[in-house]
Length: 293
Image 1 (cartoon, helix red, strand yellow):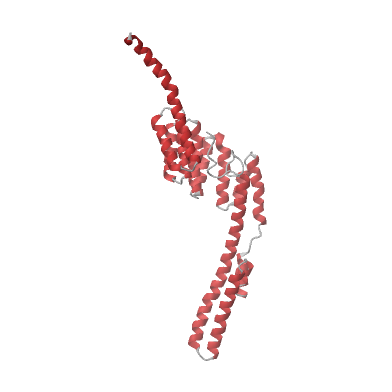
Image 2 (tube, helix red, strand yellow):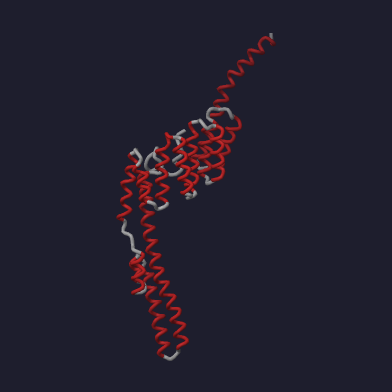
């Protein structure tokens, strides 16, 4: 009797084990996602690896690799992120996640501020996965903006059909209206009157110090010459030439820094307004470009 029931028991165990294993797999992924949401990226990676080890043939395996890439990216583990993308593309080249992984590979370069490599990777992803071409082109435009190539970024955006891209292209005109300071004017002002260029660029305190130091050395050197102390006068005059040249250089540098702050401020504003990701829309940070699984 017992021997007759044994096959039936085995069948029942197999039937009951399938859903249990599936439930375990889902719980593993949910827990890994929870750790990621808590910014515990290292442990999230461990749980994604556990899932892949225990359930290598699960339909969610490509998604787990993509999520693991995202965790590496969030934790700034660049090499591991690239390696995981390579593994996903090698094992699941036709999966839905493959295109997203290619974009994440470009994001790795973007986050490292290697915008040239990022543009190359975004371009390759757009060519290989036409359905993602718009998203790739939008990020290429952001690479160009980060590199300071406003005109080329505008041309890139004007080729997009998405309203978000067109809106950003329109806003790029604001760069031309920024109240920049002319480095040439700043240098000329400080050449005519030491410290004037610093005042022009919004550094009144630095301007006052530059004026006082240059005036002090000029007066001291003149007094030394008047007293017949040519050696001391020559030394003071030589030092004054250094201060004078430094005052001009400082004014020019301040103008460049002033303009850079204006441009970065506008770029940050546009990033908040339009977002970095075409699919998810405005006010989406880099890691929120994390795909809907």
